[in-house]
Image (cartoon, rainbow, N blue to C red; front, side, top):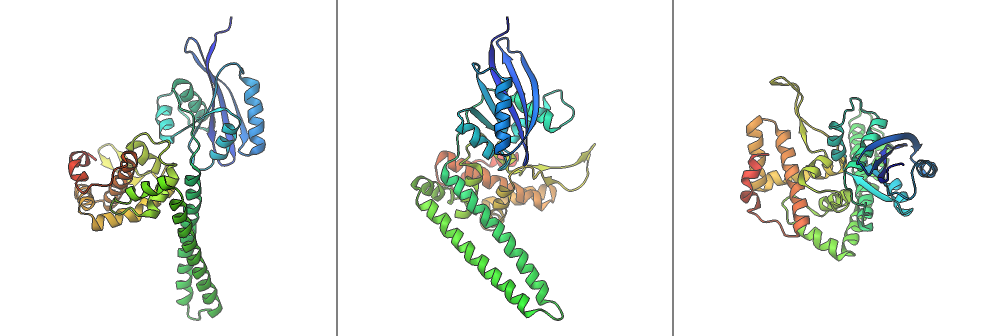
Length: 346
């Protein structure tokens, strides 16, 4: 007689164009097995094929859960599709899967082995159902990312304009067109800022939250909006460490024995939009806030690497936003002093 199943999990390694799916099960004796694997396109046609394949290889009367990593934007359409069909869906922070992967007896990291690891994670852990982000966070993320792209485009055009103006025989028409494009982008940036303010004004809860967050030195409306948009209001975040890892603000050094090979660098394995959002606020906080300046000076005096000091302030600011969001209490000037002992261990 076959054992009764406690869990069935479809673990998915999501890429831009592919979904690598592994199926696993846990029986009443807590024995886990990963027994099937297949790759599908990350589009509507692939979703339908995947759903049919999973249904064919699982037992309908036992619980089934779909588990995947939070992979930028590539997992979202798939997650919405599954949730819309009524399936149990869990989305996991990448660092959790990476840490779990290291505990497994798997030496080679491939899409297939990663999907199997995600499946095992789903079988062994008690997971919450994915909660779809608030519409306002989705809208904010869309327009703040558009703003980021426009700023990058304007910077590129300004550099091209400077190069053209430095030519021995600059093209007047070329210069005029570049100047027109810069003005157009400037107008679009003003329009986006207006949209952000309108979105915030129409959501009283968000308006109050942003007002509280912006009491932090160096954190303005745009930065706070990006942070909440990119984390969906910290929906998947459970700790400060998880947050900084998600942002890719963990510093790594290449070491060999007792010597350090090369300069220390941040991992950059997380959300690049969060990292960009924290850069200028950190510089402002170092310049104008004595507390954050003290953190920067202490870190730099310890290892003479300014980048580590700047990243430390970025982390502290991001962690502070998380704390303010969770407690809903304004920033206190003596907060860092009260937590100096924690800071010294950073």
